[in-house]
Length: 238
Image (cartoon, rainbow, N blue to C red; front, side):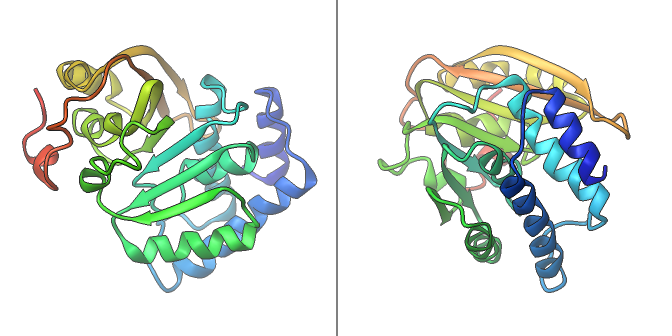
């Protein structure tokens, strides 16, 4: 996906990028490739592939969820900044917090934010399990996002504790999303959530399947969740 196609397809979905925003995506790509030579951020480095599989793919969440409002967003396990940095570039009004367990990735994100001149961004080195019990962050976010971090039954325990009552957890999944959602139904309910809607579609050009799952936070998450680091993955709520 070259720049022109990227801009065109986003425009068809109602996302119009300014020349400054287009320049930010260019800088993002250049910085990602530069840093990827010294640390493992992504296996995808071809420009057209990055624009499709990272930038465009991240922004598909905004096709089905309204990020135009001034929301407090937390991205769990964002890695090299996906999906939240592309969303932040397109919607600068967002107040963004990213939590990631690897400090080297947090260093990259700090540098990236400076290169892109992003405002209202915070990067925190922590595990989601310990982050989710901290009073400054627990149930403090309008929206929590996660892309391909873990299966949904695990991901719900990492993300729903951070969502404020009335807010939403937006999970971005590839294939097998219906099976994951079925297996996660109990966890979502126990953690105070309710699945509102799922959107399944194909990524352009390569036609791979994607699913956006929106889970609303209806009631507070019980205090015992999230459990200690490693437990959600070893023993998901089922």
